[in-house]
Amino acid sequence: MISRVVMRRVLGPDHPNTLTSRNNLASAYRESGDLGQAVPLLEATLTDSERVLGPDHPHTLGSRTNLASAHYTAGDLGRAIPLLETTLTDCERVLGPDHPTTRVVRSKSINDDDQAGSADLRRRPSKTRFNNPVSSITFDTVC
Image 1 (cartoon, rainbow, N blue to C red):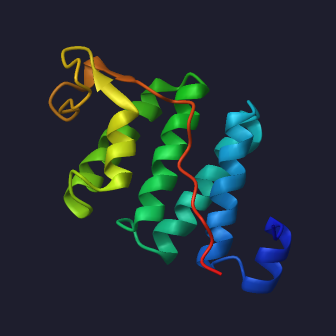
Image 2 (cartoon, rainbow, N blue to C red):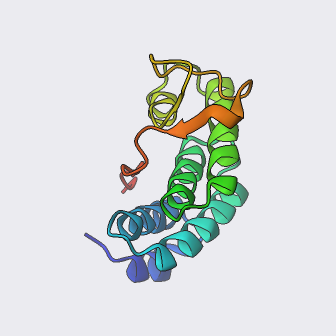
């Protein structure tokens, strides 16, 4: 596997594969409990993904979900829940309710009033809680 440093140097910091590599590394940091490295890298990667790929690109939406999960793991529900709610709304609008990314985002949150896990998070955000905050959305590189 090509390292993040090599990807950045060869492909450039804005290449989609570099962004993918950064997202996946940040997700590995989060899953290993290193939130001090994960959160800043996820924030920077999300900012760059929104600028390069656009806010509605599936990888950008996945990066946003991973950042929400990192905030949740860090105990920052004030950031985690609104970010997850916004991401779910955007996934449903852009990708549709049955897209794999939408399903993953939806599976990460459930509403206390909805045992099926298909909660309308926009209507009752105070009852939103994470269902599966540990898993991350990772992506394969293009080349």
